[in-house]
Amino acid sequence: GTLDSVEPEATLDVFRRTLDLDLESGLGRSGSFGNGVLIGHIGLASGLHLDRVWVVGLSEGTFPARQRDDSLLPDRERLVTATLPLRSEATGDQHRHLLAALASAGAGGQATLLRPRGDLRQSNERAPCRWLPEVLGVVDAGGSTEGLDTLGESWVTHVPSFAGGVLASAFAPTDQEYALKSLVRFAREHGDVDSHPMVQAGGPLAPGHQLQSARASARFTRFDGNLAGAVIPSPTQLATPTSATALETWARCPQRYFMEQVLRVAPLDTPEQRQRIDPLSKGTLVHTILERFVAAKIGAHRKPESTTRGWSSADRQRMQDVASEAFAEVEAKGLTGEPLYWRRDQVLIRRDLAAFVELDHERRHTNRLTPLATELAFGLGGAPPVEILLPSGQSFLLRGSIDLVDIADDGHLVVVDYKTGRSQKMTASDPHKGGTKLQLVLYANAARSVLSTANNAAAQVTSRTPVSSYYWHIHAASKYKVEGYEVSPEVQQATLGAVETIIDNIAAGVFTQHPEESTRTQWVSCDICDPDGLGTAEARRRFVRKAVSPALTDYLVLAEPSLAPAATFEPS
Image 1: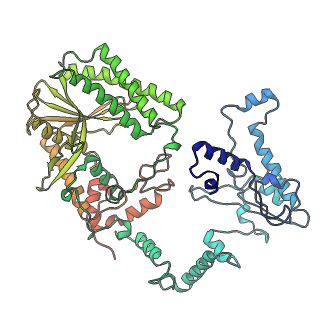
Image 2 (image 1 turned 90 degrees about the vertical axis):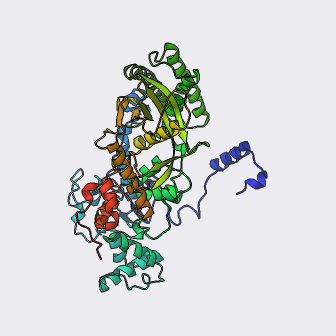
Image 3 (image 1 turned 180 degrees about the vertical axis):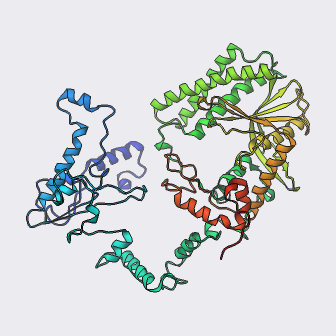
């Protein structure tokens, strides 16, 4: 706020110096020491005389905190120095701090100890601090903490929950707690809060109460993503082409499709917090390297390279040179994370690229394949989109880019889509995985469409040319699996039927969340279903509760048949 007075257009150097000065200066305090309220670490109480003491967070894991050995200077190394404090001694320090804080209240002072029993981020109950029995004088030092929560002493107050604490308090310290107290008392007297002035139409809580009531019901409402009647353009009505990924997004989570494709809302990207290159950037990097490698081979000849030659030793070296160039590009963009991790990731990526060359060499010899096109674009970069005809006669425009198209000696096309994630176990008996894997069939149709109109001298491709389509996992953890199938009429019919279900439900306004059974992991699979990263248990219960709605039947049959009811009805 004061930087403008220093210099109207401050340079980065001036900003840095000003920030350093501000950070070095003390924060100051209000009033004089010894008067008012002192808030700080429990160690600050040592040696003070206080009128009242409150100690919060007296539960295992918080106080005492979990002690972990230092990975750089473990205790066994600290012992050698005889001067550095041991991590294992920190628990004893916390014990002494607690006793000193209680002693600071003096003979005439008062101390209040607060012990949280739960944590909103965890489902388990938290154990009391191990030193509570000792300081409370209920058992000998070192005794068990069992029974603390059932003590009937007059100096113990059991607060069952936040709502219970609000109701039990003699005085509401804030307007919000006063209003909550009024609502709970009203609900106890009348059975609900529907007729409370704050909840009735026009009241400040009316919208929130309506939302909570709707989501708690078994009905599929607008608060759950039911936008029937709203004008939501489906892919068949759009003049711009749609991607296979967008359609797959709806199959995984319709509400995510609505956020990303209709509202254009996405989670904020925080590249400064990355320690490693993120999966999306890594996938793009590997695709770029493979595209440049294969494209150079195709471009070196008017006709594709003979299938009997495969990749030479010079080609293997060229792959590594192409990788070095691409690595430098992503480094310049700041996408690689910490240097230590990035050096390791480069080694792993180079290993995967070397494996690709060897496996592709063998694949071409065995199946007599010749590279025909790489990054074959449609609906992108000025290339016309591909029209996809659905079983009902509807059609939509598709855009995308096919990683690799090979052609066999007999004219059979082979479409390959590179993947850097885990394998999907794709088979012709389950060709689209509940609508979440549509690329193989859609890209097979696109390849035929684009190449049949490209006047390609190397291959005569028509709308009836047989096509096989595969995911190739360029990753050691997936064992470099190639998964896919020949796009037979049966596979084509099943997959395009799934596409039609997706498009019809988009037009019908079905944008429910589809939370997984559990996401209690470090990886959040869907930011829409689990926006705070605390798990999807409640969202999943809500989804299952609303599965009886007829509006969700088509989606359930496609994405989760076990929840699709045999006979549906709309509950009141």
